Amino acid sequence: VSRIVVKIGTSSLMHGNGKLNLQAIDQLSYTLTGLVNEGKQVILVSSGAIGAGMGQLGLTERPEQIQQQQALASIGQSELMTVYQQRFAAYGQRISQVLLTHDILDYPQSRQYVHNTIEQLLNWGVIPVVNENDTVAVNELDHRVTFSDNDQLSAIVAVRSHADLLIMLSDIDGFYTSNPHKDPHAKLIKELHQVTADSLKRAGGAGTVFGTGGMATKLTAAADILKHNQMMVLANGTNPSIIFNIMNGEEVGTLFI
Ligand code: ADP
Image (cartoon, rainbow, N blue to C red):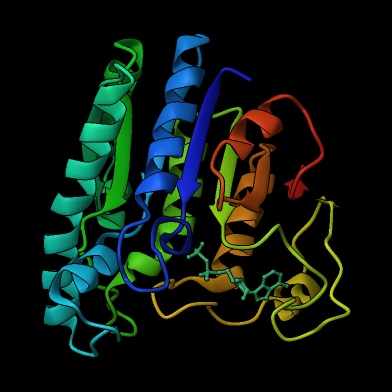
């Protein structure tokens, strides 16, 4: 494995009280820097902008209004990048910010520019930190800010950059036979080769007030990965150094292959 996309969810980046989990961000920075130092190319897809914005303003509930969500994302994105910048710099790792929207990726010309930029960054040993550009990205269908799609965005980035592996970190050990927060008999599925209608039925809603996607968007992302004969691991990001265990080939989380 030489090119890895890591997606980290809001729930792994935030404490329950709405503050950024600085220890998790520090561990993530340390771990990803370690991979780059081993000669690997790393792309980080990071959620958490709206959650961080909510924390800054002391909000405990995600507001309904799109303009408020987008303004929160704008506040939080800059805080998030400041923290990443500081933590990665402490380990001597350069990072960059790449804000994407889905429509950019629909146009061959702009898609090519994005591709070229990311290739250049990786060649320079920089870790691109990718997020959706929430200020302009609104889902036309349900008129919601489409940040929940960072799961899908990470799959798109992994497919387009021909990554060897997509590591998706969440607040749960992997994909279970049903939501373990509701069903004490839920069992961890260690390996999945196909995302079926039945698997989607087993994925409920989002787990936290700050999280957005829930398991369904992760499964959709996994389906995209499998369609392109790529690999994805869904694992618990409470301690981001779990990435080292995954890279060592240890059996953690759910492997989509
Ligand atoms: P993130 O913020 O990391 O993207 P989410 O909170 O959006 O995470 O999604 C993870 C949550 O999905 C879990 O905490 C759990 O409550 C919920 N969930 C629903 N169905 C399942 C399932 N079958 N297996 C695992 N988690 C599930």
